[in-house]
Image 1 (cartoon, rainbow, N blue to C red):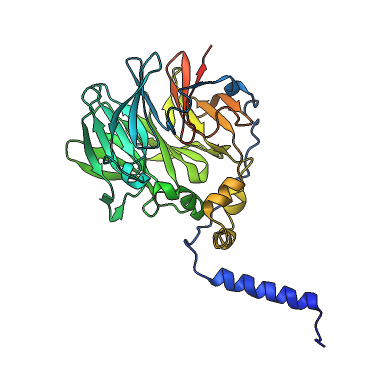
Image 2: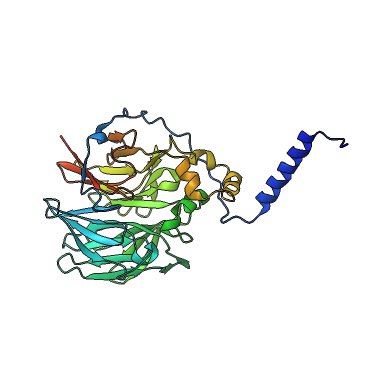
Length: 372
């Protein structure tokens, strides 16, 4: 008869298995970081249900209109199948161009447009998560690849292009989210928590790509100020937005524009009142990201049993949230869909002055809400 109770032996066996599993190689080496306590959603302005009044346009006729651009009454967007589409004022949908090859099969070949911008000369610029930076003539559908996939900048490849904004001088500022992970692996990138994202600058005259900010965690949306004196850059992995100065005595410096945000900031776009709209596809109140942040050992252990997709999707719930910020960083207004039943996972806001159009990387429609 054993000198030790069965319960003790079982506990030792479980502990031994746990140690052996932990010592097994992981798909990544998580980075430890600390976040401030998540803010209560109603800290600054009350939670509301305004987004529940949104209309669903072209439902089940398009998928994942992540980013939106507006010109001459026409809305342009990129969809999950790699196409750039046009939506006319009477809501007719036509395909403009496919950035990837014909008859492609998977996302890495077909591409995934994530950011769209028009310039004053009427050219459309598109950044694709896999295929790079493009210039598109919307009259002919002709596209020109300006920055190719896997471009090396300072010894590191751009594997995950994300968003862009274009200055009146033609300079293009864009973010990339990782030098290690592709877009389809974005949940692994979030679980790893690394800081290899960058804010880059493309000069069309020289074709040179240079670094403005290095060491960001899951860099995402980028937006020029109205006077083009600064850029706003969303750092989704740290729940904050940076301001990067382009002119003046602080040129080349950065400061925090908004910190300890209630969720992962996605694309930033101008509001018709002179401020900035920020879309939040996921909020922290229903997510374990804050729990995982200071515990890399826990993330390392979990991904040996469960996929990052399962971990994050099982610890988050749909919620619709957009916020308008003033140039000094204070929140002007917020619009919510607390249950996420109407407009979940919002990625961008297009403000036309009399309506807001809401992009999403998952929704099979384009959402619209009328402004008073």
